[in-house]
Length: 183
Image (cartoon, rainbow, N blue to C red; front, side, top):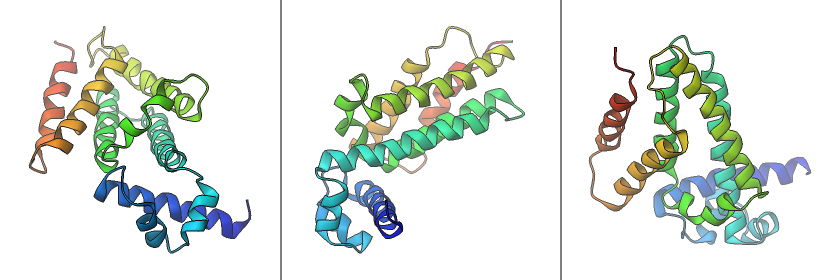
């Protein structure tokens, strides 16, 4: 990709993430192009369909969460490193208003870029959880997939109901307390 095309691509992804956060996954593509300061034709050159754009934004989030998990493997406190990663999920989920639901088919279809990215992200998270379990700070028998569904459930609930800014964190703290290994 030429340098100017790459800049436009990156600007479109950044603008789409912001617009989806503000207005949800059904936001007008024209608003995204305007926010990125490119023409709607440029948006469609990079992302022929709305679904292509949704998946590209989601991929960036999933890849970032994977990279953050790998960085947190060096955390001096394995349990806190894992909890920090769960908080990052909570924060990233809150920015995408409906984004995860919009890409669910691609997430579940083997071989798609979204499926591959999610599997890589989950594998990195499994390493974090295993590290916390190895130090006996996190309970054994915890299924990461189940746990991520609960965290994303917190995001979905707080998208749909009037909430206070600290409610998602309070809800996550209940989950974290349940993750702790008992002395």
